[in-house]
Length: 87
Image (cartoon, rainbow, N blue to C red; front, side, top):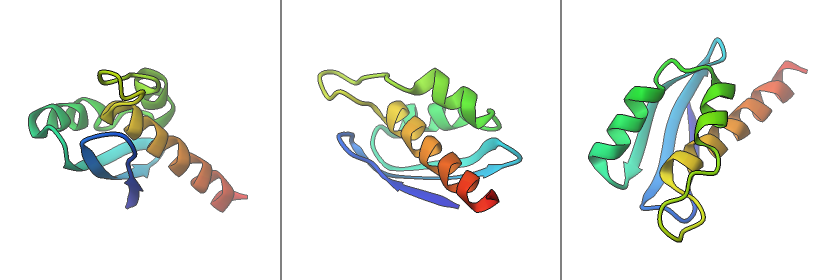
């Protein structure tokens, strides 16, 4: 299980797994409960690179980021971590 401390969003942390290259078990701590449950459900089982491509750069208001963008950043870091583990 990966844990990511967010920056600039209402959600404070994101938890998820990547198994077989697919993102699973996404959970947000804090934030807009209904919207974040929807993001988690829509992204469940999505290939990690696709999730990053779809969500990276989405902004919420004038924050310069969003919970979706933070999830994409978290998945990017997790993929980098897994790649280092595979080397």
